Image 1 (cartoon, helix red, strand yellow):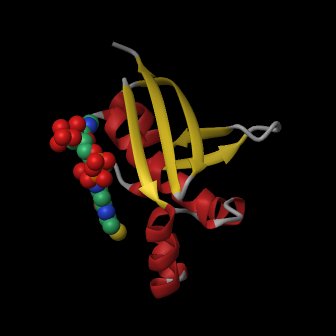
Image 2: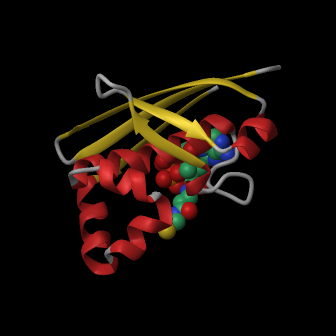
Length: 117
Ligand SMILES: CC(C)(COP(=O)(O)OP(=O)(O)OC[C@H]1O[C@@H](n2cnc3c(N)ncnc32)[C@H](O)[C@@H]1OP(=O)(O)O)[C@@H](O)C(=O)NCCC(=O)NCCS
């Protein structure tokens, strides 16, 4: 299953300026907040979570919330997804891949999730 999302970096910057940490902690855990060093990265993380929700086929909903998956980085800097055990079991997740890009004021994320049929 595949999911993709695009986010205006400005939108993340202005919401962050308005609501600060309250906004960040709505969609990111502490480790993710420490990992995202710029608004472009934050926008990429937002896009990643929405892309995950699309790959799962449910959107951000009662079935999958922003905090049900954590983005972390490999030793070489590649973004990876860690799902909660509950989500792994519920969606029968076998593996996942995430790619993020930002340029021209936008961040885009693409996600592939493989499940046990
Ligand atoms: C599914 C979701 C992620 C779509 O994101 P969006 O930014 O509203 O819209 P996008 O333009 O990125 O995507 C729209 C496309 O997503 C796809 N889509 C819709 N529901 C989907 C689902 N359940 N699974 C997979 N893809 C879905 C559709 O193809 C849709 O395009 P279409 O209506 O023309 O067919 C969105 O419905 C959602 O859950 N948003 C949550 C936002 C939120 O909770 N904000 C809280 C603010 S604090």
